[in-house]
Image 1 (cartoon, helix red, strand yellow):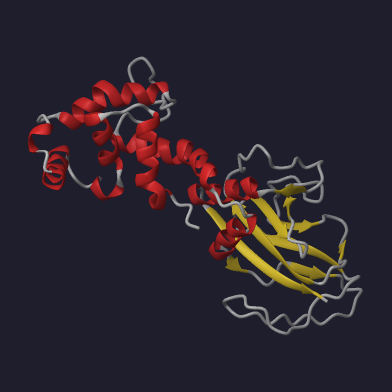
Image 2 (cartoon, rainbow, N blue to C red; image 1 turned 180 degrees about the vertical axis):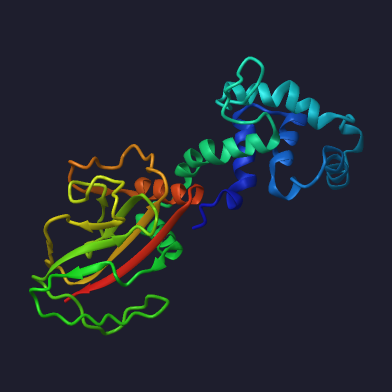
Length: 284
């Protein structure tokens, strides 16, 4: 499922126009001025396009779009949280412009909207994250005290193939090179189908770290247990500390994730400069 703003743009803007109570000229001016396909057009060019498309030549006054925005749309958006700069609000977060409104909608309003339409199955959201991630076959580290030969042969489509795996009872840890990023979210999908957030948690160091290398758990190993099957890891490397209020604290155990948590991560990576990596390993 596609969770990008561009994919949902017109449906999103239409529903927001209804929610904000825009009607007639204001309804049309709000939607058509903000959709991506019209952003290169001047207001005059946009009116000409709409006149031709809708055959309502006499419906638009000469300055309909600007009048609608100045008299109705901007004041309504301000009431609904659009914090724009003005004489009485010089420290506003956004410019009072079409671009400023789009930025506000994408950063603050759309992430809440998309939560209402996410799939009922967490696995669908996980698959979207998985497809966005780059393969990294160096995440798993096996204790050198055990003589294991790992040769996991997985093709570009990550189709299951016969391969050597990690035996039950092995001691492993996850290792991540932050590659210049300062923060990290790590989510594991266990064989059981459950999703857990391992970073941040009590198993991870407090970020950011100076050395750029993170091991999970810090001073120990995880022991591999049944059931047998594939487990998957997705690591989200972030430039800034992720502001997701449900993330575990560093003294807490890993959090079991539900669909809405995964949607939050997906929304986050859409709007932030992140690097996603993935790894899949077989427990035998």
